Image 1 (tube, rainbow over the protein chains, first blue to last red):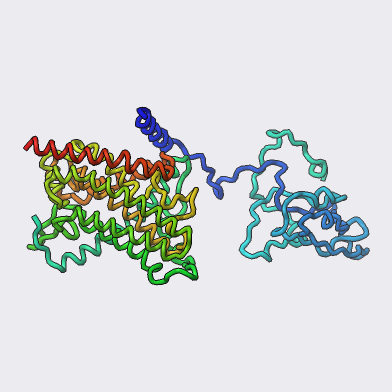
Image 2: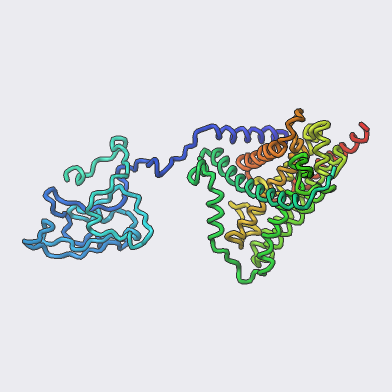
Length: 165
Length: 335
């Protein structure tokens, strides 16, 4: 009982001391903490160096997707309209990001490394319809606004598809 | 002492004071968040306006726009009236606090308080007790078990701590030899600020006051983190906001009362010529106490309910009683 008062006063000292320290909060929109190099963010579709799309419309990603958020409608490549190197290409490729759980299975399932998960995480919208990303949006280069931590800081090998594409 | 004041001075003065108290309330919420934030190594509000000063306004807009839904079974008139009652009594209690010595301008006398009644101290306590009705009735009229239990909890706490709170100021009344707050303040300036001779009374008053305004660590009426809201479980929107405002204004009034009773009210220590700036000293002292309340909230964990009751009845009440008795003896002896 005799320790109650001094100990209580000591507690007041502890809280007061914090006021003169610098807050540790990261001010988010101004400061963006670099994401982990293998962070799974918004998807990207990739092209070959000659401009053809890597995706051949096989729908394996859609089959692998546990959230069932990918929709692929393939079409035949023709000599006049060659979109991908294979027989077929994805005429429609949509990802419903409001359902996506960012598990990365689509990335694993893809036989041509056409789809990968990028680092974009600022994908909130005012409208649910805006969260359905079409092929054009997925093919476009990502907005350069996500800082990524230096790979050398982590024991993370560069995935081969990022190394030679 | 109680000079006559024309009614056309009293009414605008009351309007000004009410609005100033509301501004203080807004500032207190801001100060509380800011200080709590800094004491927890956070920034606190820093987005709305410079240093987050517009946060109370953002809060107000949010609360007003929020849907205020009520339970189907709620007893409507009482349900709506309850927050109004607590807000009304909270604001009314401030009216007797003296914030200045009174001024003579253009041949008219202006009192240092909104009204200067001879028994202002008792009036404050009476209004405080009346304010409890808002909490009890609000919880009961919500027709919800959680609310009813919460209002029982609130009512038991407030009633128990009111006893020690009233007893703790008895020493001050004995020394000031008046129930008029203006007279008590003048007496302090003439002799000694009462926080030195009435130190025990001050401690009891502060602890009882923290419980009386249901501030942490005695915030059992709400206990956000471990119990369902309490008497205002079924309140939302601005009705809830009014309850919250009443609570903050009670805290401001209590700080003002503490300043008045123990820290010389609107006086500046020793220098009598500075008393013209009375309201400024009063507000400065008041906000120092409000900061203390916030500091206490940031430091101490919440009590368990049996601990709260034990502390109120077995520690605070005997200490306050002994303090009052000893003060009475000494006052008679010195005379």
